[in-house]
Image 1 (spheres, rainbow, N blue to C red):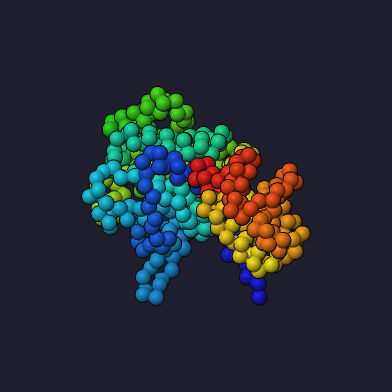
Image 2 (cartoon, helix red, strand yellow; image 1 turned 90 degrees about the vertical axis):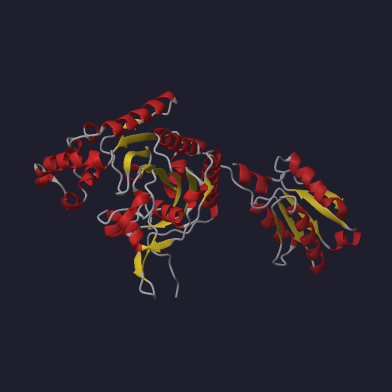
Amino acid sequence: MRYERVKGTVDIFGQDIPYWYFVEQRAIQVALLFGYKEIRTPVFEQTELFARSVGQETDIVQKEMYTFTDKGGRSITLRPEGTAPTIRAFLENSMINLGLPQRFYYLGPMFRYERPQAGRLRQFHQFGIELIGSADPAADVETIQLAKMFLDSLELKKYKIYINSIGCQECRRAYKEALRSYYEHHYDHICDDCKRRFETNIMRLLDCKVDINVAKQAPKISDYLCDHCRDHYESIKQMLTDLRVYFHEDSSLVRGLDYYTRTVFEIKHESLGAQSTILAGGRYDGLCKELGGHDIPSLGFASGIERLILAVKAEEIEIPKPPYCDVYIASIGKQARVKAFQIAQGLRLCKIPVISDVNSRSLKAQLKHADKLGAILAIIIGENELAQSTVQVKNLLTETQSEVEFDYVVDYVLDLLKVEGRKGRGFREGNNT
């Protein structure tokens, strides 16, 4: 019986792997530049964590979570997002004692039961950041700056930043009443999902992709912001303008998670159609308290790796291709293989990617395989070479060949690769791209 991958998942290998290296390494580099430290949380949590944080009536909790009862009778959910687990870890491990603000980044898989399509999978991967412990609008600006710098580091050009403020609990109380009054007069013209949201989470009607025209005419949250929230939002816009971070205001932008307050933002890419959002986030000032901690203002964002890769491919951005094999060592016979392994180890200690034959193939087959791997050099060791304590070093780019003594092979190869512009590329490029 042959087994197939579960619907909504993908196998990542071959030509796709360099894209993952590229995006993930740039994400980490930019996060480190802003002083963020990595955090790793379990891929499953107590279900109640997401019900309380994301919102009991959200689509994620109602329709999309992978939830099961474990053998101890506990309700467990595969994480659908990374913010709630990060806040849970922050509170549980008393990280407030380390001082505020705390900055964390994460990279990892998330799980949602959605209809699979390009840019939307049931297991997907996110890069996210969380800044815990600042209510200052400067924190919002820095977070958007980080997001922009990350996308710029991927050399993306065709994206736009959208921002909005959804106010605090006090602002939203009056705004929700105005929304309810408006939608009561348009109830017969909204979709079934919106009719459900009308009863459970009325602000989500603004995010409807069906009744767009109805949402466009709805009251604007900007007309209901309290003085404090308005000042906060105006400060953010002014600082972004001063920093030449170009943005668009979108009064319909509310985000799909209940924990958001005040600032929300999305970054969309023009080439991805319905799944155009490549990064989104905002402020969640009440989440720490909601999860049993102190009232600590916080904010962050998450970005889907799969969608970012689609955007990179759509813009035909040339990415670094990490070499899998700079040097191939072809050996004939058991003693030659031992020597091949010794030389290979010496080169690897110098950060050179090396592959040695492990299939006892003919010399012709080994050299053909070296060429297929894209190797620059082939080191050949046979009986004659063993007898003379030498190897043949063949440059597969120029078809030239030299005889080199055992003791000088590593230095000779390093010099030759330096000439070809590939010295030490295996690890160094992987860490600096």
